[in-house]
Amino acid sequence: MVVLTEEEKKEMSAVIAKELPKLRQLLNVTQAELGYLCGFSRIRVSQIETGKAEMSWSQLTSVMFVVMANQRAKEYFCANNLLGARFLQFIQRKDENIPPDVNVTVRPDFITMYQEIAKKVTPTAGFSF
Image: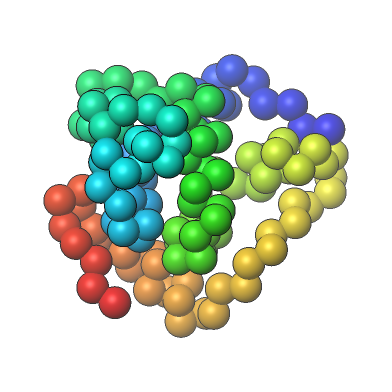
């Protein structure tokens, strides 16, 4: 089974922290609402988004639970391969040589759109679909 090192977990947490404003916009939630859904405060969400605090592994898993329950956020996560196969293999308790199950089908035009969003959107910009 895939075992993540503490360094890998830290790197993955940094990736999701960087993507948090985009994910929050896709979820259509405020910092306070995301904090409530994930079990931490609006202030903590703000600190993570501005780089004043690091996202913990438990916070990452809480965010991923919410992301995977939302179609648009899940499509964005998968289309941009945000954490790579090892994260999904770890969560799904797979061996490294067994590809993870990805239970989302993303239309090719959506993949292009989500990849463009990843390139262009800043934390203060809004989405327009």
